[in-house]
Image 1 (cartoon, rainbow, N blue to C red):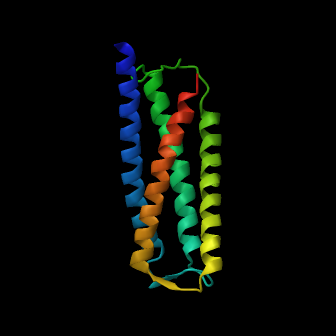
Image 2 (image 1 turned 45 degrees about the horizontal axis):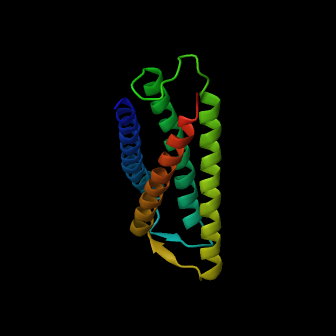
Length: 161
């Protein structure tokens, strides 16, 4: 019976974390580009700046890095406070793992995104995307990256003993 409660608690944490990361990143990755690119009317697919790469690479890298680090921090604090199983001792060293995992996942996701954009850019002529659509794309891509990263971060953070 206790094992079922423990699994449900971790499942609940994982679901709440994914929802929080997704919604937070949807908002941040819509508002920030809106402010940054406020002077622009269009975002170029390739060529002159601003481009889709200059819009989406920071979105992906920062979303994944921040989501992973926030997941580690939240999960570790709850485990140390014995609010989440498996619990951790207060002296457990977790910060280096959290930072390295955050950087590694951020770079991996950004690399994958860059590769996909490179293929897209190579196969298409330059086009201009209206700023509104580009900003919505940024929000959706950032939210999706954070959603996926949140599950990976939980799995990795559970390995800390």
